[in-house]
Amino acid sequence: MCKVARNFFTAEEQQRIRDAVQQAESRTSGEIVPMVVDQSYHYPRAEILGAGFFSLATALLLAWWLGDSSIWVFLPLFLAGYFPYRWLINALPGLKRRMIHPQEITEEVAEKAMVSFVEQGLHYTRDATGILLLVSLFERRVQVLADRGINAKVDPAVWQEIVDTVVDGLRSGKACDALCAAIGRCGDLLEQKCPRREDDTDELPNPILGSARAETPNGP
Image (cartoon, rainbow, N blue to C red; front, side, top):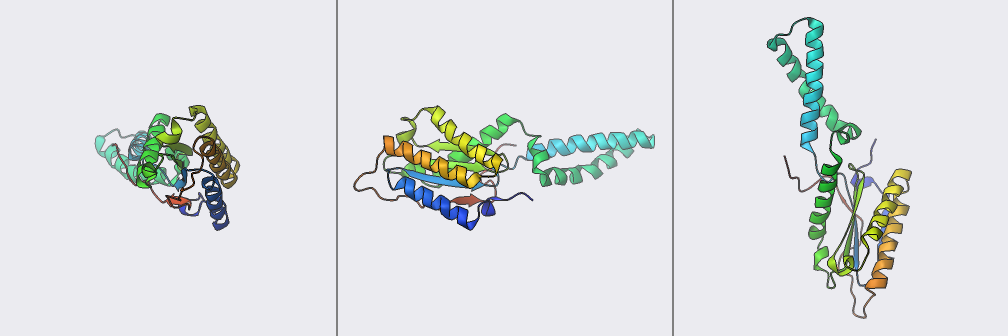
C-alpha cells in the first residue's frame, strides 16, 4: 500500500527534518520549508480518456464475440465498463501516471510549488530568501523554488542537484536522509550568499508540511 503525505515520514523522521531545518536556518538569514503532498493535481483527463479507451476496447471485443455489431448492444457494454474502468484507473496510481503526458506533470508540479510558496508566506521574508522543497508523491517529482534574494545568486544547476538528491532518496527508500541532506545543502547556499544577521528571527514555522490532496486544481 502506498504511503500518503500525512504518514509518509514517521514521527522520528519528521523530527529529524525539523532539526535539519532549524540547524540550517540558525546560520543563515533564509527560511526553508519542506512540504510533502499526495499529488499536485488530480488529472481528471487521464481518468476520462483512459476509461473511455478501455471501455471502448472491451465493448468492441464483447460485441464481436457476441456476433452483434448493433449500437444497442455496443452502447450498454461501453457504459457498463466506463465507470468501473475509471474507478480502477484512479485506484491504481501507477496505471494513471502512465496515462499523463510528462510535460503536463511537470507543469502541474511547478504550479503547485508556486501556489504553495505563496500560501506558506515564503515571498514575505525580509531578504526574499525563502526556499520551498516540494515533494509530490503521486508524480514522483521534487520541485525546489527559491525567492529572488537567493535564486539570483545560485546557478540553476545547483538547484537541480538538490532535486536529484531527493529524487534518488525517494527511489532508494531513504527519503528522510535525502531530504535532510537537501535541507543542509540549502543551508550551505544561504550561509554563503545570505549569512545570518545580528537581528535575524525565525520568520516561518519549521515543521515538515503535508497535504492530503492537490488544493488548487486547474485545467480540464
